[in-house]
Amino acid sequence: TYVIAQPCVDVKDRSCIDECPVDCIYEGRRALYIHPDECVDCGACEPVCPVEAIFFEADLPAHWQDYRQSAVHFFEAA
Ligand code: SF4
Ligand code: F3S
Image (cartoon, rainbow, N blue to C red; front, top):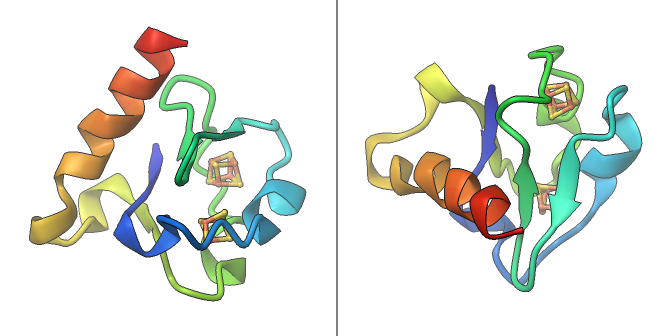
C-alpha cells in the first residue's frame, strides 16, 4: 500500500484523489488517508502531490512510520 504522511496535514491539496483508479483515498479532518486494503499499488498518486506527502510503504521515511498505523486506525474508526 501507499501511505500519506505528515506533509498532507492541513494542506489537503487533493490532487491525489483525481489520480486514484480505485478511489481509495479518503478525506479525514486534517489529512487524507489511503485505504491499505483497497490500494492497488499503482503509484499514480505519488508524483502529483505538490508537497510530496505520498510514499510506497517500504519507502516511508523513518520519522513518518506512524502514518501507516494512522491510516489503519482511521479506517477502523470509520
Ligand atoms: Fe490509489 Fe494507486 Fe495511490 Fe494506491 S497507489 S492510493 S491505488 S493512486
Ligand atoms: Fe494530501 Fe498531497 Fe493528496 S497534500 S490530499 S496527499 S495531493
